[in-house]
Amino acid sequence: MPSRVGRRGRLVRLLLNLQALYTIVGAWISDNIVGPWTSLWEEITKAVVRGWIITWQRWLNAWSGILLALFPGARREVRGRPRAHSEAWGAWLKGGCDSGDGHVWTASDFVLRAGYPLEEHTVTTSDGYILTMHRIPRTGGKEVTLFQHGVLDTSLGWVANGSVGSQAFAAYDAGFDVWLGNSRSNAPRMHADRACQGLRYWHYSANEQAMGDVGAQVEHIHAVKMAELGGSNGGGNERERGGAAGEGTATSHAAGRFREDAPATRSSSRRRRTSGSNGVAPRRAPSADELQGDDEGESRQPAPPARDDATPLPTTHCKGLSFRIPEERRDPAPEHLPYNLQGVGHSLGAACLLMYVTVCRMQGRPHRLRRLVLMSPAGFHSHVPRTIAACKWLMPWAARLMDLVLPGRGLGLRLPSPFLRYVTFKLTLDLSELPALQSLVRRSMQALMSGDGSEWDLAMQMPHYNSTSMPAVSLHTGAHFGQWARDPAFRLFDHGSAAANRAVYAAPRPPSIAHNYRLLDVPVDLVAGTSDRVVGVEDVKMHARWLARSGQPIHLREFDVGHMDLTFAVKPELRDHVLRRLLRPL
Image 1: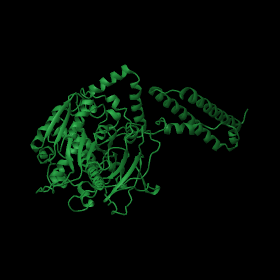
Image 2: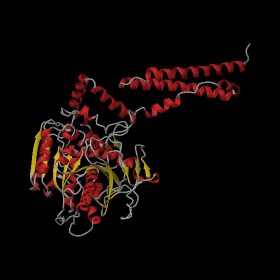
Image 3: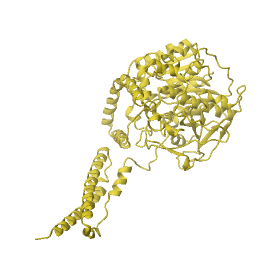
Image 4: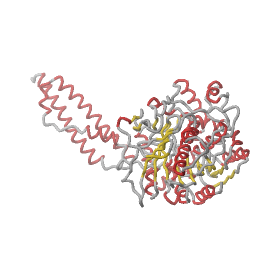
């Protein structure tokens, strides 16, 4: 009768042989059967099969390890066995959402590929958020345009249609110095204060996106143009004038570098620049010690160091901007600027431009803008698409609960994981290869958006939607949209109680932007889409009725386009109309 040790030895050998056989067979299946599959559903199957293989292999490894620990004499059986492939599979799982060379195209790549010059500017808002602006420069040009994107979009939307069909390229070809703005909702989501990472980063509403993001970018353009044109603003220095965008000074930081491997059809280059208080100068690249990591692992960011020509950026501690309205409003001294800055906005970007100019007028501060061209501006939402109708009630309550449970924190609303983003966006790409199914999906998405005529399926294939990152919307910005849908007065963010509102606005209710349109001192051109069901024609007309009280020229034009088609699939007549409005005398 065999001894107990002999039986144990045979059991160990059996497990080790099974482990080796399973490793070899699993590797062959992975390399020869699973590996070549490419479509979405096959990718999902591939992930399941490989996960199954790894699970069972880990089970065998665990039991083998236990037996080897209990019976050291059996270790000789391990000699000569093939090594497991778990390291290779682990690497595949870790990078399985990556494809190609891993490069994600940005607005900079589109500008360079179209053969236009490019500058990348990094701007720090008064509350410490670090934004990236893209400039198609006409150095020394006096006609300047700022393009501000909408919700779940980036500056890429203004250049994604190529040199013929993009609004930004059309403006540059017409002689404008073009600036493409971004918001704090976009990657890489950087902040100057280490304390404002993670949930604290997302504690903002459309208030901050208007006065913080738009304000800082406008002031940055002002500083650059004053330095280029050698202009004077009638006394004072640039540092004093640069503080108009909320409390504190909007500063900018950048690393000087060139990207030589970007495709381009003619000679062009990528330059990153920084603006100090007295102009524009290059700066060294950030060192490793200056890099700050994001709590969510999405980015590593340069912490802005102190400059020689300016005081260090003060610690913000995630403080908000000032929205207090003085009891006695005083108009700022007339400005005689050597340049003309006009703003073009879409959806939330258009609403933020309106909020920025109106609040500046309410606070008696200069806003630098000479004209606004607004396409489907948010703010009035009499009709909400059925897919998000419940959000106008849920979002405000969710934000209020967040403020109660975790004060000073928020949430970023987007697909939460690289795998979910990969599956979702891979699905849209696979559907585009099946015309009949693509048409069905497009019709379904349009039905969910209450009949909006936009090509939503193609919009989701934009490069800024990828497994690495995607545009997001904060919980409080979503709550702000809900407030606009429930209260047709286009107000600043309601903090939920009279006491909380008094602490921010010195009033029990947030000020109405629409009621203060009468203070505007710039012409406004409105564009509405008759197929737009996100911001309908009636909502744009509501803006026009309130804007008429300002006494400034107000112009409204309707086009047969959906909400996303105002930037994503621009028709020639729409592009030409926007350009004509920008070229009108000021």
